[in-house]
Every structure is written in structure tokens, then in C-alpha cells.
Image 1 (cartoon, one colour):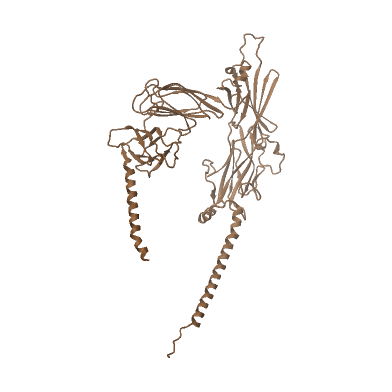
Image 2 (cartoon, one colour):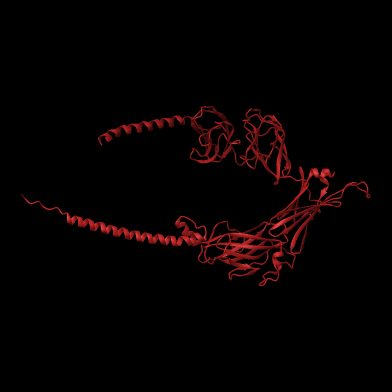
Length: 607
């Protein structure tokens, strides 16, 4: 015990020395922390280079002037190439310390030019290095700008298959401290080829001052393809249907800027022609090489409506709306088909002869079952080629707050009271205005796989539940309401499934026009435009309170039925255990009292 007491002063001395050592280290590392800029200073921009060694932990704070925002650019940085992001990085925070919200993080594996903005009064950036004995370099440029002002023609969105754009003021000198972003988005199936006719920016080996950055995707963090400056004429190609271009300039040496154009390249293989159909359009693709082999020029192709022109890249694409461009709709044998014709306009010097084949492409979409069938055949004199593919109807189902069906309910699961009125809508996304949605069958189930038991709300267009009411046909919407219920001996979750028919509104003999049929007069299996829609779960509010109190939510009705006997067994076990403890305690006490009685101290007799 005495030895332990003698060690206490020694332990206290060691702890004190360690605390002093740590404090000295912390104070030593804070020497590179400083405040840059200030509201009282007239300086609105600054550029500098950081030279950092190993085991650094430095932070700087920028304070913006009144009514300004801060933009900071790390246009060039060299960090430990073998270092991890956890041990070596640059972090930018909103606020006057590293405790503020993180705006972004940069490390050696970052494939973009980091540029951050903040509207807060202060911005803090921190650089942490690992133990590798190498020199690090970070070039930083920051400036303050008025957030309400904009530079004309500085950035934008381009969504055509081909186009062009230039830097602001081109070919005159570009503005100082500009940050412009152009987003290029073309249709699915294409990639983008970007060609700079001219780039004339400040020359620098690392492009630290003025530069153009090109990203392979829809944002400035998608993956850097290239960062260029000086006088160059580069070409870039995306791997997908989107590309992002950034222009960043500093406060000196403004030159002409740049001029760029782009085209689209269809990436999918098309030997001759292809056709796809959706709920609102047909998309016909024709290979330009195929047309050239037939000695046709794509500019002479036309649809039934010649004002609808194709998009031309390395392929010819007709995007044909189902309700326009001369598309013909036909309803027969319980099916709906959409047809259009692509023809080649010939210009012959004679009204009697021609040396070109008659070229015609008939495109046809047929709605079948829970899908869309595409058919295309080409007539070249007596030569016919057939193609087919599959697609799907685009339908969805949602709950709404009221019978106005204006505000859909986004919560999932949706908690309701028993007997609360629920409003349900099935929507068809299609461009054809002459289609109607008919609710043939709607059923409910306590599980999403709709295994037994199930309960029919609507059957053959008829209400099967006393609280259910189906609204009249309303174009692309099928609507009904019913009062909430729960399944007996199951968790209070309800899933809804509706089988939907889509008909032509002008067909008075269609199944949709017949409405409720208590005894089905004819089988609807021949109807080709059927589809299903599912929504859920819907739960009782009291189940939400119970799950919140227990700390978890039930997942299915099987868990609910199993947990009830399990909880009862726990309660019974606890009672039995308590009784056993009481019995054992009683026996021990009695035994102890008996032993005390048997071994009482007796007074010794005097000798």
C-alpha cells in the first residue's frame, strides 16, 4: 500500500508533462492559421501559393465585405499521390472555424477543379498533410462578388443534338473574375463531341489563372476530362449523353476567350433502322450509311406531316408524337395501333421515268397486354423488312388528400384512422388525349405480394365494398375512394392493387364504355392494353404510436402474430423467476437464523 502511495506523485508528474507537450504541439501547429481579408479592407481578391511539409494542420479564414459572397478556387494542387483522403486533404467550411458545415473536401484522388462558394460572413479552409516526406503545393485564388449580378452569356443549358457557344464578350476580351458553367444534355443513346474552334486565355503551364475545364457528365464533379488554357484548339468526347464546361478567370490579363461547337454521336448499333415506342412517341432511327448505300440524302426524308423534321447526327432520328406529325390511330379488335410513314421525296427531271427506288418506311406501334409492341417494315419496291420490339405503358397510382385530387400524399407508409376516407388515383402518362383509364379490378392485401387473404374493392368495374365509390371516366385518370379498414388477425398494413384497362374514348363498344358488369358479358383477355398498379403500405395511426414506443416498426403481418405469444411467454417467465427468487431468499434467511440459534455464545464457567 505504501508503494502505491509513493507512485502517485510520479504518475501526476508524467501526466502533467504529457499535457504540456501536447499543448506545445498544438500551439506549434496553429502558427499557419490566420485570417485573410476583412470587411474593412478594400482588397476584393487575392492569389497565393502554399508550400506545405509533412504533418501539417493549417487553417485560414476569409471574411467577406458586406453584401458580398466568397468564391475560392483551387486551380492547381499537388498532394501526396499515395496518401489517403482521411489523412491528407483540403476541407472547406462555412463559418469562422473548422466546426462549421462542410462545403467540400479535396484530396489527391479528386478528378475535378475544386471551386467553392459561400454567402456566409466567413469561410474557412483547412489543409492537413500526412507523414510522407515530400513537398506539397496548393495554388489558391479567392475573390468576393455580388451575388445578385450576372455576366451576360455566361453559362447556360444546351439540349439540342448540336449547337455552339462562346465565352462572354467573344471575340473581345473576356470579363475578369468570371465563373461560367455550360450544361450540355442530349437525348439518351447519344454521346457528345465537343470541338473548340479557338481558346485564347492566359498562358500558364498548370493553367492556374484562367482556364476552361471540361467534365464527363452533368456536374462539375463528374470527372475531369481536361483543364486547358493558353492558345489551343482541343477536342473532347463524352462517354454519356451529358457534358459540362466551365470557364474560370482571375483579375488580370484578359484575352479573347473561346469559341466552341458540339455535335451528337448515336452510340447504339443500328445496321439499317430501329424503332422504339413509349406512351407518348415513336422513335425511328435510320443509319446514314444505309441511306448513302441507296443514294438517298437524309434532308429529303419526311413524315406524313412534312413540317416535322428529323434530327441528324451520324444517324437520322424521327421523334414522332402519337398525337401529331400525321400519326394515324386505329382501333380494331380491341387493340390500338399508331402508324406513320417516312418517305423519300424525289426530284426528277422527267414525269415519266426515274432511276431511284421508291423508298418508304412504315412505322407502327401496337399496344399489347402490359406492354407496347413496335413494328416497322420498309418497302423498297417489293422488298419488305420486318422488325419488332417490346415496351410498356407508363402508369402510376397514388393517394390524395381530398377528392379534388390536387395534392398527392408522399409519405410511406401512410398512417390513417379506421374508417378514414382515402382517395386513390391511377394516372396514365401518354400524349394521346383520346385515351381513357378504366378501373376493372382493385383489391387489397395485408402483404405486398398479395397472397391470401385479399379483399376486393372493385371487381369488373363494380363496387364490391359498401364504402367504395368509383368516379366517372376522366381521361388519363381512374379514380375512386373508400374508407380505411384493417385485416383481422394481421398487422394493420394494407396494400392496394388495381388492374387497369386503357381504351379509346371514341369507341362506344369498348369495355371502358360498358362500365360495371355484374356478370361479365365477354372476356377481357382479348383486350391488349391491360396494366397493373400497386401502392402501399397504408397503416393505422395507433400502430405508428406502438412502433414508436417499442423503438421499431413491424415489417409484415407474420412478425406481428409471432411477437404476441413471445411477449406473453416473457411475462410468464419473469413471474416464475421472481417467485423462485423469493422462495430461495426465504430458505436462506431461515437457515441463517437456525444456525445463529444453534451456535449462540455461552458464558464460560469460572474455574
